[in-house]
Length: 321
Image 1 (tube, rainbow, N blue to C red):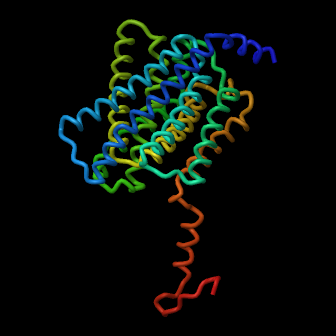
Image 2 (spheres, rainbow, N blue to C red; image 1 turned 180 degrees about the horizontal axis):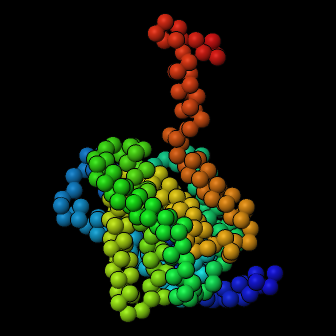
């Protein structure tokens, strides 16, 4: 109780309003940038022809809005907002903004399951501000060295780097596949997710290293940011944004949770581990509801029915006659 009261006291007052406002507006601007590019591609598929100058303008608007959104989120944390508090707000505003623009611009009709899935996802990420890990304000250099050199941390960071390389290659191979391609969507989601989580970990190191090490970390942070933003801009133009944004944000939260446990020792700072894990289960279910074309049980049932049928013998019976 004392810890909770302390956190409330620290985050109460005008400061909290400012942090939440910056995070919320930043999330909405990020979704706006994604939908600028999505709308231009949507109009192109309907027969609209854009000049090279106009296409470049859409790309720059997407990039500017995304960078502004990221900048506002960073400002909310730099001014003292706890990441565990502002990140769920930013994610929820991004999801809500995406549904707003998709509906307003007529790019996507949100069915009942998609609306419910989006709201479930927003409610789930908002819960993270209460039950997420309460990390110390700053790690010492000795703690950082110990955390980053742990075998599990090395193995997991290596896996994420390998995934970024493989997904970059996969994105290049599938870039011109149909917009409905599940493989292309998966590769873009994985690329942006892993590069974002890697960037978050690198960003934590910026305030903890000095001298030549700081310049090296800053370069890695910039390089990772280029990959992440490049993947985001391409995904906004080549994927269904109504599916990409929820899938990417929820997978980012899940991978970030795994990274927290394996790299940053979050197990020591999570006081309700079962509730914490179940929130991520709700995130996955929210994305599942938001993707009506994805029906795992129905797909398995159809596969089993086809495998167990006797079409070669001209028998097409089923359990229903």
